[in-house]
Image (tube, rainbow, N blue to C red; front, top):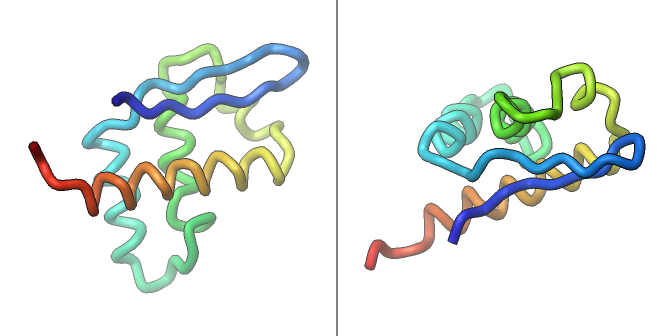
Length: 89
């Protein structure tokens, strides 16, 4: 199953590219950084990455409200944890 993030801004829906190995590495590097604590800090850069190459420009991502950005970080954290705990079949 492919995991994507979605949000609405100015009545337009934005969909990220699928969660991939690069997103996993960005989160893992942040997770191993002793200066970053909690999923919101750990996943912030990966949220930006997930929307690279989509209609959601960096200006749009920067303009979303804190609640939406937090939700995106938490969803991305769940994708990361799922990837860590799921066995390859």
